[in-house]
Image (tube, rainbow, N blue to C red):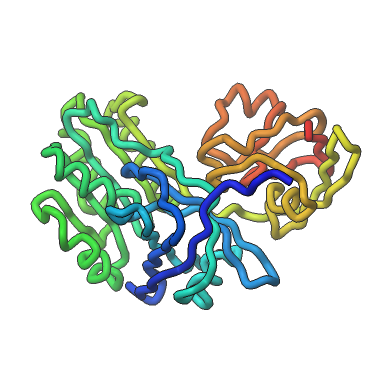
Length: 316
């Protein structure tokens, strides 16, 4: 049997930040985590014996000795179970398997100025950004958007950072003049953004209108994969047929059937779970494939995408 890759950890400490935000410190005893750069995330696996949850979370902080990682988890209204489990049962001592640590959202070291835009739980990757940018004397500004009732919690999270460079807003980006501020930025500025889908779409469209070159606009999408109508997949190499239920992802159905399917971020952002489609029409919901790849219908990201047809045949 192949050796399991990852880190056996457990919850060391839990702190409630708001009714919907909790900070978890995860610790390992016999090894250390790999080096963590700003923007990194950890793929966590946890459960209670009845069900195993696999979610990826941005790493807010890594201890100097490399034995502790900190993540912040929002109790999502549309939670598929993972965030709700952590909020209700994530107590000190709970075992957590950390399958991988990776960075799909790094700071561009050559940028002359950095503008960070976040909304809600989208602040998490930027908490590590702020520490790094300040330490190297970089030119940066963070605009964070949140609901009025959560403002004190986010201001507390940001209290240790340079307050001249950190702005917290309770109005919509369009209401506080963010488009004008972006319009005034120099051509060399890099923009980074993370938040709910509506916020992401607004920033994408606004940076495009403001003339930012695509290579200077960076984003990290996170969202809970939506369900849909059930469908069936055929694994071409074995002939097995697997039903994907309406409330589970294709990746979850494959894992439930003990299929060794590739995956990493579990949010349609990295492309590691891409699988060749031999027959059927995918319903693409990722942020990785190009328009040409989508149109070809020859590949699918199993962690978020589904099927438009009743059946998909995969090269698995």
